Image (tube, rainbow, N blue to C red; front, side, top):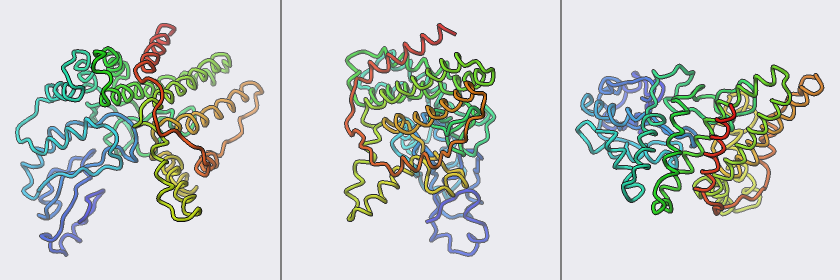
Length: 396
């Protein structure tokens, strides 16, 4: 078995092996279409795969055309395509994308995606609901309508933008991980309508796990999108030496992060504690446990040692909006950074550089305990988020 990724397998290698005994999983097709895999793979059988959620990131969105149009086109043009593959770096995000992709493997005719999406909302929540249908219509037109030609960005990924709350602090940061979009992939204001509609879904449907997951995910993404509107305002206040405005905006930033962590804590699928809880049972010695716990934490933050984290720009590759991680890692980074900038405004002396790798490595070696059970009511918290954002709109 071989993976097709960034020029591999090479033509000279393929020419030198019995291709009937070879099996290729094609995971390199998202950004640059490579449609003639009969030629590229010299007839070797392959599965059309792909990578969603690089690093298991929680960002909501995907390019649905890869599922609804390209998959069928590839099957028609390539006699050596023998199936599909779900080949993900994280399988606990974007359930809509997985549902759609796996069903498309069984379809030969063009899909009415708006109708399929409306049916998806009905079966996902258990009944027909006008507000649920409206929410998913909005999601389909925004986060699930990502196209490379919609915005220019420096990335090899056909993926959604990340939250700047998760980024290593800086006034000019535009992404959390190095290989990700630098800008919004859809209008944030339009996306917010999905949250408004989900909050109005009939009370009888609000107790389902699928509704609760989607509500938290959409509210979480709404807050993440707000970070991209707020950071340029913070930068302008700092560069204008407007300390009162800088203070107000940075307090708002940290408040939104507090709201996000509270929201995430209300759903079991967004708990850092559930990621860390199994680790002690994998170890046979205290030393092994310490190493495994470090690995489980560092893969979320620094992605290893300083050489990998900074030298290879792998820090925050696996960034995630999870309760506990948001509160104790991302928020504390931004709080420390804003405090340094505020001190610069107060004294006129340049802020001292912060060793972000050392900051992250200290957390990686920490032994904090994180909850494994949710707390709080997701709907009530999401409603507070909606009102908070509406109030901010009115004050602008």
